[in-house]
Amino acid sequence: MRDLVPESGYYYPNRMARILLDSMEEVMGRNGLNALLNLTNMRHLITDPPPDNLERGFDFAYISNLNGGLDDIYGPRGGRGLALRGGRAMFSQGLRQFGALAGVGDLAFKVLPLTAKLRIGVPAVARIFTQFSDQTSRVNDEGDHFLYYIDRCSMCWGREADKPICFIAVGILQEALRWVSGGLEFRVEELECIAMGAKACVFKIDKEPIK
Image (tube, rainbow, N blue to C red; front, top):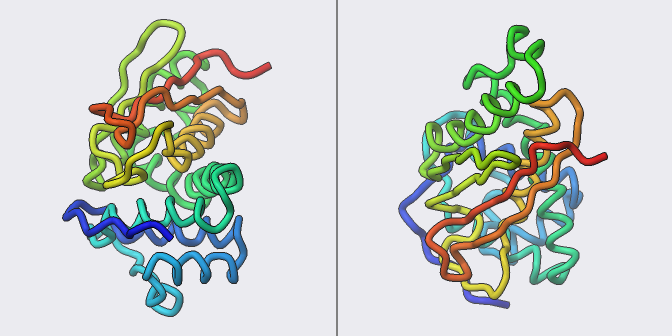
């Protein structure tokens, strides 16, 4: 087993962490989640999950270790698939509540054309994480695609890798785009990763939905 990443001093709000653990249980089952928590020295969360509040109390290292633990248990390919599914479940289970707080859940938004929904919705997802957690995110509009930057990333915190590893974030973005667009699927690809030595984790989001 790899060495665990030490605590960072940067945090997710407890509610986001609770949503993350619930979504992992959804895709892995209770026994799978318990095995992951035991492996990553977080067995106390089996019986004492994070409280349902917005206090920033769940260290980035915990998320990074959970992400790495998926690879240790299921291998890189299996871990990637579970991380993607977990990220999608994380948004669908609860992060969309934060979307409503960011102003992308009301009726006026839903009747906008797709281009406007994406122009408003993608930066709104970035603002959710920047506003409610210590994970800093921003978006650049590049014409036919967006570049979504995570300048301080929880998924790969303290890790080194030879390829991008932030598949939970890819899953979150995929599901967020499906929600923002009213059910369409979009291609999301991580181009650069801090774990590879980059200054930021960078994700390319195509504006055209997948046919």
